Length: 164
Length: 342
Image (cartoon, rainbow over all chains, first blue to last red; front, side, top):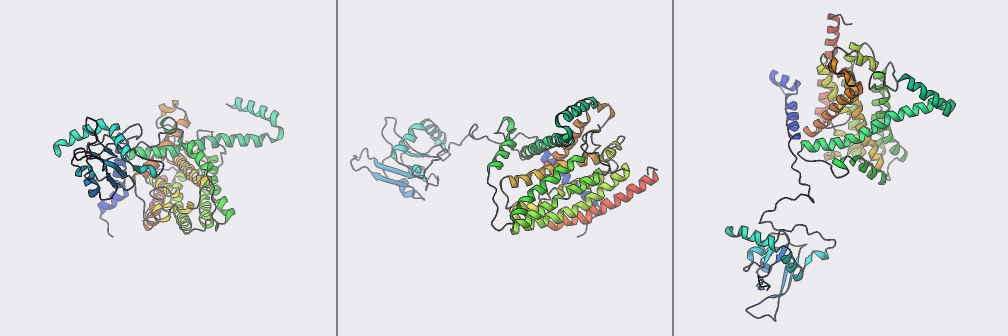
């Protein structure tokens, strides 16, 4: 290892170290970028894929027509659908619609596959539970999610509609 | 001041009789140790805040206003945890070692003058005493590494011992010109000698050598090889938990404050203000400001530099700092002879 005179003087004067210290000192006076989570939250994109919601038509009937496309496309096989055999062809619907959130990978394929915009991944990401059982969502839970997040889901779908 | 002390002495002698000198010594120790321990605990908070700010984060702010009660929360957590002793460990040595790390760091404070005359023991060999006591800390480190009966601990202790011994040489040599200039080993005399010019101006390279050496002495980044977490888990205190771990932690931070105080006394003029007209501000405030700045530099360095490799560490100590310090001793001696200072 050979050092030129310039390098030697530079290393004795700790020039690179002082430059490094200057960078950290500069950053010390920059405003912090921390989001203090429970009080502050980031703005989520309209395309954010959170907890699933099942939507209803404006007249209150379920949108889902039990076509099972979401069940078929689901790569994690997290969706289980049973067709309501009592229902008529014109208002075909499901009797069971279960999503296993412990399997779901939140890829959003179910939303993409859905021909009637019934299953949508909503903006809710705070879905921790105390037991694994609570991670299994049945149809009532998903429809209730639809009621709970209706405004935001509608707004998100409207915001993203022109790109679809 | 003297009258107040007289009143306290006569009152104490009336109350305690013959054991009053002992009680008075205990009072003085507590008056010294209380602020030091508070400084140590708040240095941990300051470290997290400063490094947080440098990484564009906030740092702890949940416990108390601005996170000011965080050190107490940490202490409470450490107190209520279990002190786990490994089955293969040498129990007695294992438990003594953390104390041996913390106690020297606190003992050395007794010779540190905070302002003119404000010193627990104004000994004539103050600097020798401080150096001797502070180098005892390495025994605690070695004992902890050995007694843990763990390879990581042992390697960490070995690294720490060789590192502290190596850098003690450079540190000791960088102090010698200060002693030469002051003509005294008494820390108060060393400070008073800097009335006209702080030692950092004639001895600037040595001040840098001293500061980098004490960063290595206290096992701080970028010289924290003894606790290199990527290789050694936590180094010599891998097996420690709860308050026995807390003692190592306190020892490290107490050592940081101690060496900063020593650097202030040796190179930055102790309690002396930078210019004469600023002496309306009391001496201990200047002392605190200077020590605080040096501690900030410790944290600043930690936030900036990556860790040294072991051979680089040894090369820096023996091949760079030792020659620089030796040369500067010679230069100082020659200059003192030429200018007739000796």
